[in-house]
Length: 500
Image 1 (tube, rainbow, N blue to C red):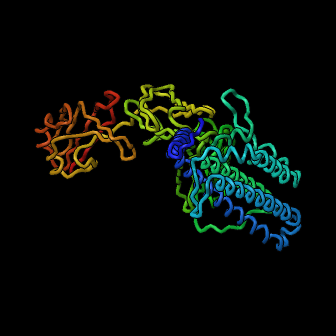
Image 2: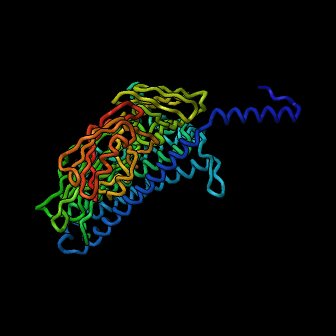
Image 3: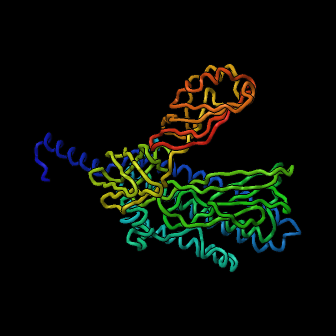
C-alpha cells in the first residue's frame, strides 16, 4: 500500500496496517492463561526436584568424612559435583534465553511483556539461530554428563531425560528442533517450552546424582511416620516424550512391602518404590491413577490413590480445555474452550466421535456413544493439533427421601411427600433426574408381614397410607427404581431407610 503525503490519511493508513497485524496475530487469552498455568507448575516441579537433589548433595558431602564410605566417595562425589556444574551452567543459559525472549517481546520495567507476540520466538530462535545453539547445548550436556563414568553411560544414555529431538509431525516424520518448538510460537508458549527443558535438566541431574549416591549408600533421612510419596519426572511434555511416574512409602518394613499399581497395572516394588515409564500421547491434560496398598506402623492395612496429572503440549500454541470435567458425557452439552495461535478466520475446528457447535473460543460438544472423541484444531501456518477425550455415561444418581440419610427419625420420614434422585457433588453439570417409578417394601415395627407398595413419579402419595402406619423400628426399602435423565430412562441401585 502506497502511503499518501497527507499526514491525517497517512496516520489512518498506518493505524489500519497496525490493526490488521494485531488481528492477524491475535492469540486468545485462554491459551495465554493455560500456558502461564503450565509454566508455573513446571517451575514449581523444578524447585521441588532441586530441593531433593540438594539433600542428596548434602548426604554425599557428609559421606566424604565417613570412613565407611570414604573410598567410594572419592570417586563418586567429584562426578556428582561435575554433574551439578554442568546442570547449573545449562539452566543459567536457558534462563538468559528467557530474558532475551522477554526483551524481544517489549519487556517493560514492571516486568510485563507482550505475551502473545508471535514474531519474537521466530526472530530469536530461527533467524537469530538461538534454536540451533540451544539444541547444541542440550546435546553437549548429555554427552558431558553421561560420559563422566561408564556406569552412567550404560544406565542413562538410552533414556536420558534431556532430549533435543523435534516432535513427530502429522505425516509421521520428525520435524526440525527449532521449527518444532519456536516457529511462530507465542512468547508465553516459548517460555513454557524453555521451562520444560529446565525441568528436564533438573530431572536428569536428580536421577544421575541419586545414582551416584546409591553407589555409596542410602540417604540418611529420619521418618517420624509412614508417608506415601508420589512423583513424576515432568508435568509438561511433548508427544512421544517419556514420562516416569513413581510411587512408594517413605518408611516401610521389608517384610511387608507395599503393593503399587500405576495406570491400572501392577509395577515391581524395589526399596519401597514402584516406577512406571511410558511415552506421552494425545494432547492436553492427561492423568494416570496411582494406587498404593500398604500397612502402617500399627499393622493396619491402608489404601491411598492419587490422580497424577500431566499435560501433553502441542507446538504452535493450539489448546483445548474442557470447562467442567475432563471427559465428555452422553446426553448433555459439554462446554469446551478452544485456543488458537491465530485469529478465528484462520483457524478451523472439526471433531470425530461427536458434534461440535459454536464459534470462536467457546464451543459445545455433544456425544451419543461410549468410546473416544477427538477435536482437531488447524491454524494457518501451524501444525494441526488433535485432542482426544474419553466418552462416559452420566453417573447414576442416588435415590433420596428427605435428608437422604439411611437412618431417619420416624416423624421426619412420615412428613415427606416427595422423593428424588440426586447426582454427587463432584459432578459439575447442573442436571436433574426425575423418578419414574419404584416398588416399595415396608417391614419391621407395625408391619408383621412384609407389605408392598409402589410409587409413580416423584410423589410418595402412592404409599402415604403405609407411611402413616410406620414408626420407630420400621424398615422401608425402595427397589426396581427407574429414573429419567437427559440420556433416557435407567434403573439405579435400591435404597433402604430405617426409622428410629
